[in-house]
Amino acid sequence: MRILGIETSCDETAAAVVEDGRRVLSNIISSTLNFHKPYGGVIPEIAARGHLESIDFVIQEALKKAKTKFKDIECIAVTEQPGLPGALLVGRSFAKALAFALDKRLIEVDHIIAHLYAAFLEDAVKTPAIRFPFVGLVISGGHTSLFFFRDFKEFKVLGQTRDDALGEAFDKVAKILELPYPGGPEIDRLAREFHHTKLRFNCARLAGTFDFSFSGIKTAILYFVRDWQKKNPGKRIPLKLKAEIARAFENSSMDVVIQKALAACREKGVKDLIIGGGVAANSLLRSILPQLAYDNRLSVHFASKHLCMDNAAMVAGLAYQMRP
Ligand code: KG4
Ligand code: ZN
Image (cartoon, rainbow, N blue to C red; front, top):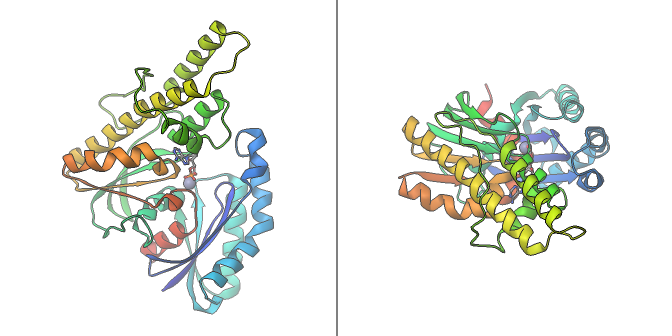
């Protein structure tokens, strides 16, 4: 069964064709990222206009790449929420009109759950068999949430961020360090250059809960940088110090995320931990978590790096599992 997926929750206009919920036949993404860069974040109006301009072409490309005609599509899947309202509206309206005109079923899915589903797509790093129950950790630009899944229709939120999302914290720390937007890949790249640091920034642990908080560590880094600038008037922070700060930020924030995820698995007695969302592409996380999981008798499954970021394959794949 082939499903056409459409995703427009943020600045990527994406369409994909996925067969039987696992095999990605095409995965097309067009982004207005370069138009947002000068502002240091996504401008909702620019994103929505970008979707309007590209959506038709992106869908045609997805079908062409998948060598699929509209008549071969079983149903149409689209991101329902969460996301930027104007951006979501374009994708949902287009998907609804298409489903109506072609007389196909429309399946609307949750963007956050779709991020987790990305780990089950066929070209994911090592596609796991879907085994329930599992604990899911979504770390993206807009969300940081831990879930307990009995199946894709029955799940519970164990905890979430009380302020910034982890990806948002990466972006804000990058801004403090005068690095380009989006900051996650920049911090990741810089941190890899600095292995050992005594520098420590405290990340809130919120003991006894599965909730997160990242605004404190971001502020600690802001104050550290301000102090450095006061002591070194007129100077710019050297790249080596930026790399050390990036590394110290990753060490603390990732430690909290990992410890919470492992604790959730222990409490729920599950054997599988699934990780999705843009920050799941992070090199430090991907290098240290598998061993820690193994030590805890767990299997950890990441989406492939290119499927961590927003895409429509995850939407089409999840829709296959959600179909009535
Ligand atoms: O999942 P996503 O594409 O969009 C949302 O649904 O929010 O995630 C985007 C976020 C951005 O904050 C970006 O900085 C972060 O993911 N990100 C990373 C990396 N690649 C992207 N954060 C840390 N390390 C990375 N390698
Ligand atoms: Zn996303």
